[in-house]
Length: 200
Image 1 (spheres, rainbow, N blue to C red):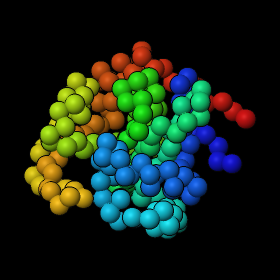
Image 2 (image 1 turned 60 degrees about the horizontal axis):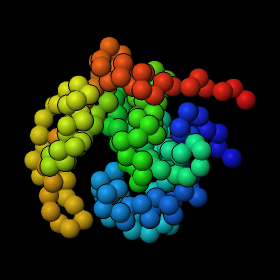
Image 3 (image 1 turned 45 degrees about the vertical axis):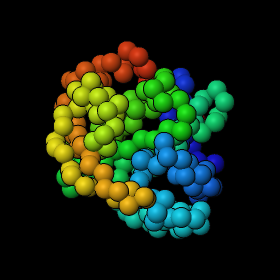
Image 4 (image 1 turned 60 degrees about the vertical axis):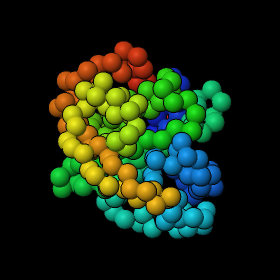
């Protein structure tokens, strides 16, 4: 049994496992979830291909990608995924993604975000995280701006969607020092304080 990375007030976070691939495959079919990894459903149209991809990535050291499953603590139902991809250890940066099939905007998602950012900057010692949002997703873009995450630019026609359309993306980035002194961390500390890791 894989140990949990985090046991919080409302969530559990653990590394994704090969047995989770069926669940991920189902989630990727949902239009509301597909933007979490827009090309993954195309690259891996079957559960077996997802497992093969997962196994191949697990062999790479240092890791290029880290993906975790978020579960609701009370029910143990899986509610979402978070990942760091394109991990660049030399420049200490990575791309951060999160996707939830339920509980969007609740304490679960806020606590998951708090844990992920704190873990990336404090434990993994990353200095920069990059975030992407579809340019027409006013809610996501609005949240980035509300949280004070600086925008780095508009990437025109950056992403080909499953239906053949090209999507514009907005790129945001947050440096470690901006996280440590910024309003997002302060707000998350008040709303969803992290629980100290339990030693077993």
